[in-house]
Picture (tube, rainbow, N blue to C red):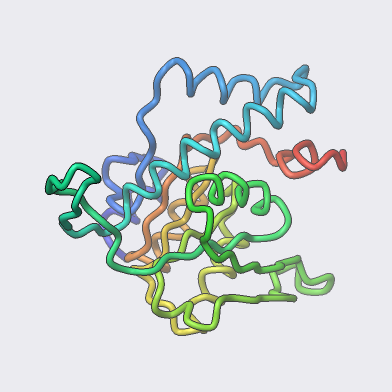
Length: 220
């Protein structure tokens, strides 16, 4: 166990000491979105609207985590423009069902991106997460993966999903976990097992809106 993990277990959670964790820059706009999402008086329509806005911000920042290479293109006026491009194919994987709320935001940014799915539920007897369904693009092991799940409370579901991808020959370092809200416990649990993964979130806090999926999809 690393010194970092010992410190986190002791309750001294410090995001700055976890290089795998990246939290988007908080401004008043983002804080307001988080506030509306967590307010029990928020209507479902406002909840979905604000959630979609926050998801889009996370997706945009997730794209910034991808490797890029320099490239030159010729403009319509025959001038050379020095730009960048993604050298590796990407895909999304949503953890059903709440992770599917993030699919539209990803498609809004990457219209032709392929998206796989993982269905995970707690086993009735063991009470541990169990994978019931997984479908990925056939060349998933060659892609950078945006693994999407809005909430990380214990990290157990995420760990099961990451393990499923690794069992399909996906490199741990190719997984970028896109998340809205996480608890310190969940972050520590994930990075202990998968130290090469990247986790991107808007907030790490003990107050985790675990009703997110029910309210987003109207199944309260």
